Image 1 (spheres, rainbow, N blue to C red):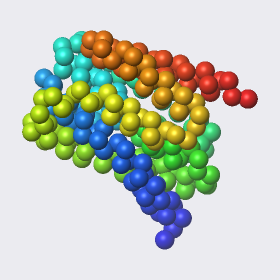
Image 2 (spheres, helix red, strand yellow):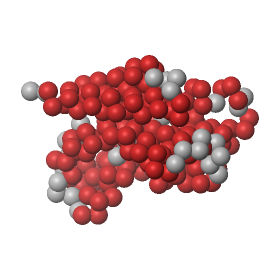
Image 3 (tube, rainbow, N blue to C red):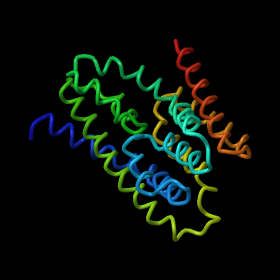
Length: 225
């Protein structure tokens, strides 16, 4: 087996235990899609357009409650603000790769892929294979998990649907990122702030938590010696 293929398979293998934490999150997202006025097919296809569960959940729930498209877009951008830190951290890793990878690779950059790939020290070809193996595998599992949630949505009691979306959302965000202090600070701050403001309408508490968490993580990153 070539070293490139071995690296890709390692990416798949290492992603499996980290993706377990995202399974309930994907199911919640599917349930949210089934519950809102957003058509099921359109909601599921948004999993490909927005490969980021937190941003997708924010956009879907806001659109489902009658919010404007601009508000949903802003919510998605705010919730995914932590990816700015991810991108900055991976700039050295992306240097020296083909143009197609530098342009398309960021599409697969989710929490789990970042947590795994950022600590790898491989030759460029092996690192690229590892990154793609992890990212593509996570993408496929995510589409399946969200679809399962959509099918399960109609059979779940009304009282058990979106009420547990916020806690599961942040479980899915916190668990895979416990590898670097700034990310832990960002996630935990977002959890606390979201809980404090959870009673605000239109999931505003989640937006506030995302903004404050991103700011806290950025400040911690800049404070590092």
